[in-house]
Length: 266
Length: 70
Image 1 (tube, rainbow over the protein chains, first blue to last red):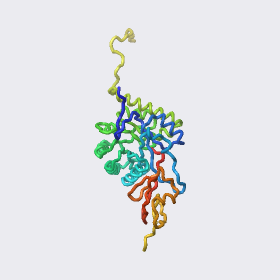
Image 2 (image 1 turned 180 degrees about the horizontal axis):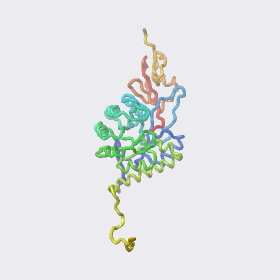
Image 3 (image 1 turned 60 degrees about the vertical axis):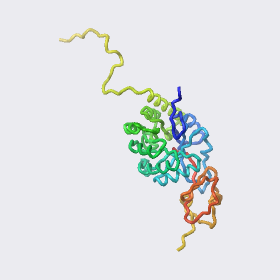
Image 4 (image 1 turned 90 degrees about the horizontal axis):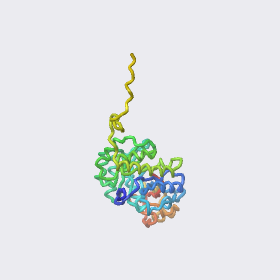
């Protein structure tokens, strides 16, 4: 049997759990958690070098990038123009032309700007990037991003880092319906069952960072997320039962043993 | 009024020495050029291959690196 794989940006992956590298207490824990997650796609951020204390934190040296697909993000960018600039810096810093596109003008809920995201996606796709845009679960926008040449669409489950889980499964369903590129649920997943739910609905993959990095045991939680994703995918492939408004007995309804009719009191 | 000869480096103004190159600026800032990327206005360069491009007054320079993120 062929492995259950999905293709993204011309590469084939068997793990449907992508993991971020933010918020880990140290590289040792991060490395172990990434190994336990089985993730093949790993996100990083781009930031200014601190000129008063120059140096770099060595993240690029801490992981085996021959085995992992590096996915830089444009986190912190508020406009399409900022995102274009950061994406181009990320490409020369890493030699990788993949970009997780974030255009987020709002700091309170970290909600993405759909117009700016689409504009930046068009520019980046034309510039040869493999673009993975982070957006709200909006089917019309998702189709427009596909048209713009994005390699995937990444609808949020709930606000970044909130751990509130999948808050609008009905909207996610509309994004999944008829999608021609992989759909990766990104942001807000808190526990493995949230990831399971996304995969059960038909998402191709999920991206998790805070839920793993802020767990009491990040390595254990990374493993649990890997299992949750596998369970959800297996359930999606197996096909769920129909939902019903009323009960439906699991046991045969005929041949039921009856006691004599109780006496009716006079 | 003459324009002050300054650069903007990572968001901060910095006096420009005439003839300063991008390569020399990184050395002056004591930035390890490997694993950084440098933007000069609309152009971007891998830090390790920063060119001997002469910087001009008003240039906006960004020196960035990869860090943990989601």
